[in-house]
Amino acid sequence: MNKLKILNDPIYGFITIPNSLIFDLIEHKYFQRLRRITQMGMSYLVYPGAHHTRFHHAIGCMHLMQKAVNVLRFKGVIISEDEEIALYIAILLHDIGHGPFSHAMEHSIVNGVSHEQISLLFMEHLNDEFNGSLTLAISIFKREYPRNFMCQLISSQLDMDRADYLKRDSFYTGVAEGNINSERLITMLHVVDDELVVENKGIYSVEKFLVARRLMYWQVYLHKTSLVAEQLLIRVLKRAKELTRQHVELKASRALMYFLKHDISEANFNTITLESFSKLDDYDVVSAMKEWQYHSDFVLRNLCEMILNRDLLKIKMKRKKIKKTVLAEHINTLMEKYNISAAEAEYFVFTGEISNQAYQQQGQRINILHKSGKIEDIVKASDQLNLKALSKPVTKYFICYPKVKL
Image (cartoon, rainbow, N blue to C red; front, side, top):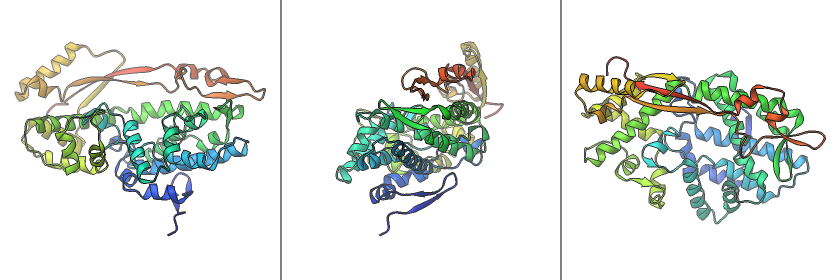
């Protein structure tokens, strides 16, 4: 069977699958599940084109990693064949642990278990299945491998993950501000003292990358409509779990029912849980909501109708924290109008905060390599004054409440 397939990608054109192991991993049911997980959660309610999946993104990341390996080898960086394959596997599987609608699961029916932790569990399970051939990839993914620049290619402030998702999400949303030149960025990469650096002539591409990241966060990822939709989805799953605990009968798929019936945390995330998780995707949640919109429970019914019909809560963004009196006023109004308890009203009236920091000067920085050999942080190397501003976190506060009627 010919396993060196070519895929046609709307962003990069033809993508080659480098070897049979990568092909077999892509063909595996765990990876194929990513076709049923949207890359951008509820963003399609704002940007109708944003229906691309984690599958698209993972394949794109692998393609960029192929480019990065070729560039670094051309510049004299020694990367063995085993390391090369490990890099492809690590980036291909870095998001395999995402649940339905990408981030909503982490805050609702799985308690405090991040998608990175679940990705690692999947990789370890696959490693057993593939006779230890993922061991090196896991070491790089966990940042345990002694060659630090390889770990940076997987996860840093200028990694292949960000290089793909900014360009891809920009393409599918139609938000041109996020369209970075990822190929140019990769061409400018180098390694000095085991650290990933960007050659001086790539400085403007890095500036554009950081500005694009900031704009994409405010304009797309933290857009108030997709934000309120995701908050509603989190509450749908939370309410469904609450009702299941009270022995209220709910219709849901076997995989979703498992997570509604069990309290899953890091401590008890076992092989059975992983297998159930591998069968869970966006379709389970959407089909459940289509059933639950007719349920007798006031909260569950209305939350599902809001998402399915895109008749969402009103959301207001503020620069200062929302006063408790304002929150209480909205809750009391809702309680009186519908004769519901405060706990039920709080599903429809709530506050929260969002933060955006395009560049973090602490920890793993983006370093620029000057022709003299001097290495300097991008903020110091750049003559773009607003890069310093981009490294400061900006926090906004929001309040959500029903428009007029439920």
